Length: 379
Ligand SMILES: *[C@@H]1O[C@H](CO)[C@@H](O)[C@H](O)[C@H]1NC(C)=O
Ligand SMILES: *[C@@H]1O[C@H](CO)[C@@H](O)[C@H](O)[C@H]1NC(C)=O
Ligand SMILES: *[C@@H]1O[C@H](CO)[C@@H](O)[C@H](O)[C@H]1NC(C)=O
Ligand SMILES: *[C@@H]1O[C@H](CO)[C@@H](O)[C@H](O)[C@H]1NC(C)=O
Ligand SMILES: *[C@@H]1O[C@H](CO)[C@@H](O)[C@H](O)[C@H]1NC(C)=O
View 1 (spheres, rainbow, N blue to C red):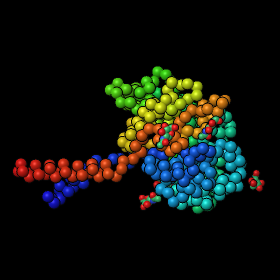
View 2 (view 1 turned 90 degrees about the vertical axis):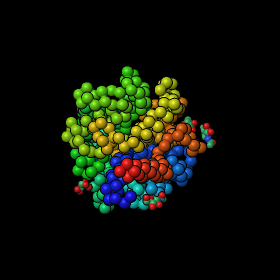
View 3 (view 1 turned 90 degrees about the horizontal axis):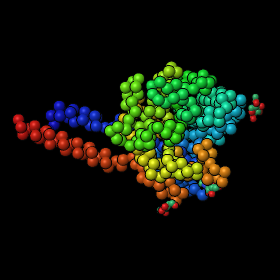
């Protein structure tokens, strides 16, 4: 039984069967009156086994609550502060003194996005201030002796890409490409940071009705694929296709290896303008399909390790949906995965219990022992 070869075989079997490093899956959390207090939110996240949170409106009191938890934090600096921070380093210091210094490293802050979807506001010149603002935040953090936090800005897929199909021909749009994206990519490479992107198959599907809905929702059917006619690669879902479009566009811009973080993705359960696609049943398919795909560790055709982190938009339905469709009466799209009473709208398996892993290891060990027995008997 203790033949060294069999031990080696056994270990290599274990190695082959252990999944590739899968993507970190987090969620966007915005607090709002009428929603549970942050302490309860931490408990929900822990029970769902969610290990990363994006705070687009980072209140210091909320950051404090995440101290001493193992939940990592992705903070965003509001767009309204980009201009003062770009102009004056003391504005950068002030923001960091309020949101980072009192809590770091007890609160596990891993990323800061200087602005979110700035190009969506259509004003390239003010978006142009993003790069100097990023540099001011970066230099201030270095002065404070903090080097581990990634800094970038979050750009929205639909505002930066020329075309997503075929993904291998994708490029970044001008003038944003030269003004913002290229200097950003240079900075990200220099500082080992990541490219942050909001990426909604929902929006692309709405713009391109010829895309089958099943392709947007991770439904697996034999004919449910799109072939990239240039590379011959088959795409089985729209999410991978969009990620690879970003990766191809970065390569055209001279940066092939920058990690990608999907700062926002999701699917609305409801739309006040009566979009038929905004339904619970589709949101459930999209999110279950997304999480299953990310956890498989398969990556995308152009990048086998896939994206490094993905933040689902969002934990609760909130009114932060101005850019995502808000009616004048205040009703907005509903993107939340939980009701205010903290129950989830549908089941999403963010993580295996350790037990299923143990069981699969046990099964492998038993199969292996049976195999060895069989070999011994047949000799
Ligand atoms: C955080 O993770 C470490 C190591 O994985 C573990 O020892 C610790 O108990 C965890 N803390 C909490 C609050 O979950
Ligand atoms: C930067 O902000 C500080 C503090 O608010 C102020 O004293 C200083 O004059 C500002 N500098 C510039 C160049 O605006
Ligand atoms: C970036 O990562 C490389 C390789 O891990 C390392 O040598 C380099 O010092 C890092 N640079 C910064 C600015 O952290
Ligand atoms: C959103 O706005 C509507 C209408 O103003 C209000 O009834 C609802 O309570 C708000 N929801 C949250 C979570 O703030
Ligand atoms: C939570 O709220 C939802 C929607 O209002 C409801 O369907 C569900 O039954 C509630 N769950 C609990 C445990 O109260």
